[in-house]
Image (cartoon, rainbow, N blue to C red; front, top):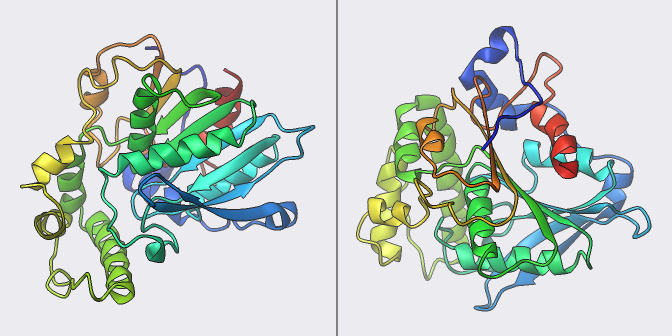
Length: 323
């Protein structure tokens, strides 16, 4: 493991981890115009058990395409999240085709599957990424995940060692929760974060109930006040898990969980991330394929450099894609 040669040095109020975390998805702007609007297309990918995941994509002309970048958003985000749009714009104009995969029940995809989204639904995401990679037709493939999407990206990198993904060259995981059980409690302990995530999650469950009233009745859930409470009730009624701890353990990535990665993988986090303990990263078993970048500041997937509200992450991407 080594540290990043490109520095991130915010100033003033941008050293505040809560401001960083909020600006990650709440910055103004990020709308597409011109060429990006005209080349955007969507496709529904069907996985082996008939799960369906929606992907929006932006293809380069074959003669100038440098490769394919697959973007995975965070929990209760979507392919239209601010950080995903910004990465799309920057990477597309550098010559890369972009595929933005929506996790189940994220974005406008509630109707595609009867089942609910859970962080343990790994197989369908892996299969979708594999399908997208095959569309690159031999060009290099880069996988970039943010927050929960970064957790998925690391699991995909691990599975790649057993079931290789065509053309996968590099994986970038930004702010991955290595211990989702602890991260859930940390969200609940921060009123603003708890309110924001809970509001979006309950809105998603309400939409799912409207679409599948014969399967779901979440009325007793809507009055609950914490992410932990909602998780426990949903797991009890709709899964085989006996507790949230058992459920979270299925996608926990602590200790030696990443020791067998065989694809170059960069992990970026901030020591001041309010919901992901930095100690978890220092305790990972070393692997020569892992480059660990820990900044003092940055909050949760923020890394906003100053009042122009530009993210260091978008600048780092240029280095990542050629390293």
